[in-house]
Image (cartoon, rainbow over all chains, first blue to last red; front, side):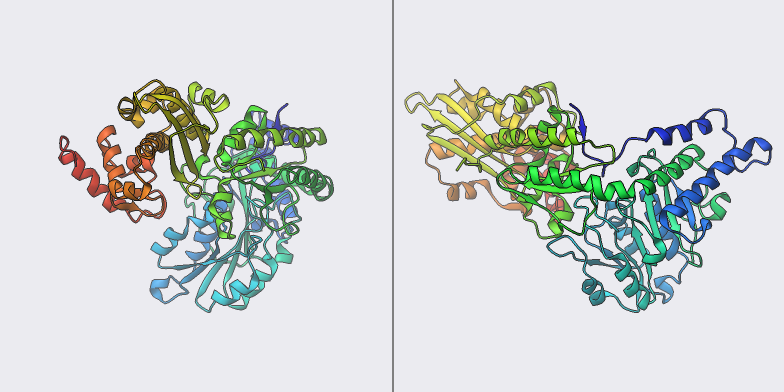
Length: 390
Length: 195
């Protein structure tokens, strides 16, 4: 059996999404910037998608949506594009940026770049449950803060951050608020007006659109300079010929995700909870992250005494795909910074496995994983010098 | 996804000589759980001939750490201690049909475990051994200058990145990178001296 439970890493393109895309890769290949009739349908496809994404995000205006190439580009565009439109620190402008300790590298690794631009980057801690607390922001924010960036939902634990409350604090100090909503999209209802954020980014391939397309919500009136400069596309805010097929796919994926939100909150949550309960019957296994305030599709569990990469490869032999917080699975030698940030000891971060479901996950797949995982864990534990049966 | 050789995956899936050894008279324990890999090597050595009669392992770590330990047990069985100590991390990598460079430290851990097990058999206590092993360079992963010198010499390493791949040294906070560079330069400028 093949069971894909790594939907926070990427998802398969939905059949309906692919069908929406195909005409623009084949017969309707016109450039939306062209003047003839042949470009009309590609132009319409992009604008339909813009409306679908705006609806998905709860945006007031369609022109608040900018198409990008991925989640990382959405983050860089938002943070760097908005800061470049402000008075720079060297000329007496605001000189602090605040990010959380559990951001995705797409935001977290902008720190050095921001420091070169003259900003001091302050890092918000998370509590033991992996959540950013509003008090933490109150403590470090000041009139010198130019921008606050906190992810909506964490990729590893699924923890949902209190974005509306954090935005209220940021705005009270006159700072811009950005949120990376890549992992929240399709899992919880997105509503940029309720959140009142200035910028919010999503990525296509996490919601059954293809890789290589994303979107940024930029609230009307937010000062901004293009991050990718050049042509006039996207109303001069993002140069480059529109990736028409993928943009059309993203629009369709957003529409489908919106329709599936209820299913996500009920059925996917039920399957996730069933999986989690099943896995936690394995001795010395622990849930990482807040049990309530998290996306309904994610569970992150540490299986003590063993290391994640060995677990994943052994799972892979059973046809089960998931991911790990262990250092061994990546080029870096440090285990998950997200799990360490919430105070998990390194040994438990090395043994963490993340399972992430999608609306295509079935009950029989979950039953199979619940049945197979104890054998996987037992096999790897038998090799561990720290594991003793009693 | 690592591109592991067939042999690495075979030793990971079907580990040879896995488990504790009841009558072991030399046990080597290296690595740390916080760093993500720990290797225990158990040897049964004939005191008269100093031939390693039995060898087993237990590993906390990734597939390549498990495979390195497992194949090492096969490589040492039947050898005398002195013959076995000639096995370098390079020999382990070769026996496994290659390892991704970032995983070379698993093979280094194999040769360290072997040394530790022989030291244990010879009654050299870990405290004394630490002195033999020299000065701590990488504090994050507890790597000494002696180990760095050894891997640089045996594998003809020339860059800090390579040393990190072999030993993990410099892979976390990175504050020891200067010192690693100095060790590389020192070893490579005296290729025949036993520093």
